[in-house]
Image (cartoon, rainbow, N blue to C red; front, side, top):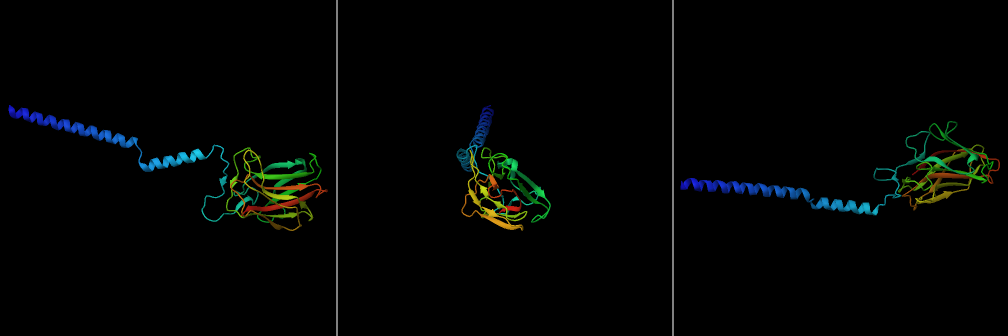
Length: 241
């Protein structure tokens, strides 16, 4: 009888110990799930810091390339419909009725199958005496839309141009210069330039320029004062290098 009572006490103690150990184990597991480890806490803190420093309308441009290393050639125009083209000739300025633009001109391109042909009539239809076109990202972005590219690493923009007859004068070829709620980080131009009837390469020097946001990838301005009878000219292979 005494033996049975002792045995029952031992069994009860063992059961109680097992119960307590199971309960403690479960509580420990729950605690480990609810408290992230040090690495997780550090990553979360870094993420929160980046979000706090990056406003919702951050003007940082899209990266021109995800590949590390030297800057890769970045086209504004290489050929009509070419998959590596960037920017859109949507920013018409001045006497917009005096300009016609064709980006699929097949007659004597500098390279590939097509080039850009510009016809300027100098009729002063809007009374300005000048006309121009911006290649923008996205279309019609005058600094009021998110867009543009981060072209950091480019040292120049090159393009080829020629006149229909020779003697056509372009007041300005330009990179950047759009000013708005979100502005281009650079504004660099060359001109006036008098074209020849043969293709010739031109370059806009971009060394030491801030190219972290380029909305206006390329533009030109032409005037009636320099071309009273109008002008026809061509452009091809417009690219950042």
